[in-house]
Image (cartoon, rainbow, N blue to C red; front, side, top):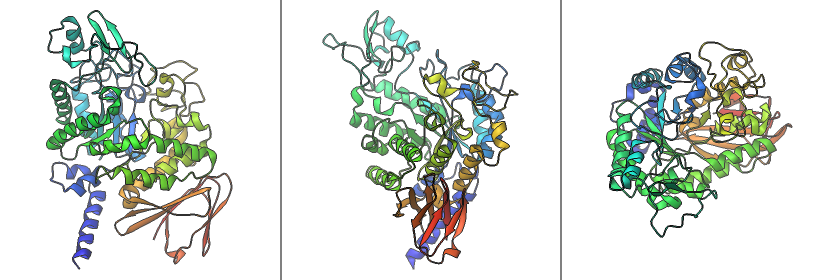
Length: 512
């Protein structure tokens, strides 16, 4: 009897977290499970310069995002990730010169606080890119370190010893030791980004203070850049030890802080980082989803997702995977697949898998972009031609030509990729098993169809994806088929007593 009551209470808590606006939970003391559940949702990555222009200078900014919060609410996302917004000499701003300020072209601290407040009013969380691995070589710390070898800031960075092999290449055969008037310094990515020295306790305290500063301004969490490279040579043990130290500090300030990390490596390398982070981007799974969508066959997607999660749980009880398709460093999905039906299928798969899906801005309207990084970070097209809020930071007709789709066009087409994303995001956000549940693979008897259950407590949802451009039948016996409720179907389906037939490249989501 006690077990029945316990399950009923847990289910009630989950339902409350699903329907009560998040602002009503903020500031209240939550249990570990309530905190875990509250962190779930679909996140939307915004490359700030490219998204929306709020002041008419052609560059995306915080005011532009504020102006487009209604769009994000309509799309259905429950969180946004802002790429770096700090002062920086580069357009991408991953080389920071002041961690406590907003770049003037992006906005002000007041704009940021307004964005957070208005996003929270719409139950949209805000996480920001925190680039703690390195600074710009124009950061005052580095300038001081280079001017005076006795400066307190000298040991903020990594300098070559007399016996250092200055020709030692980095993991991508790149140069990592860079000449300076006063020696050589270590910069993993390039000379403009000198690595910080996390063997120095002062550096660790600086990093904590930076994160604390932004938590005090209402941010809900952070995306931690280059997390596996915090120590040279990708020292996993020491890197994880540091991130655990930071997490414990931040949880003491904000118990429900959400931390998602970039650990760009195979899943076995990623796993130990779950000791420190709620989520890590799942690069291996992204590659497998795209391969399956393009090839029209299931390469064990559900079992792979289950195996990853089980491994991650060896390091944390509260694992939230972070499935995605591509991001700002990769060729866009539509450039990889170049087929809207395959792109829709890829979206259907990762938006029904466990964890917090991350949608890269413009992915939902089928934007393209490949080659140089700037091509992958082009302006979001709000209009067929132009209009208020349109970013024009890249005005070249080659890059913003008619082949790029617009939101204006997509919203007028009920069968568009935008409506496909919107329907799936809203479905996921309104269904507990899809939003927070585990995955249980099933054998469909058909290599072209991936099938799995999503389960949360006593609730269960069945998901089937026909990856193939032909009709496919799956061997599946459902007790009392008529009692199953169709939550989502983007094709035709034929029910049988022991089989279900799906139309080409279609999905079926049902619950009993």
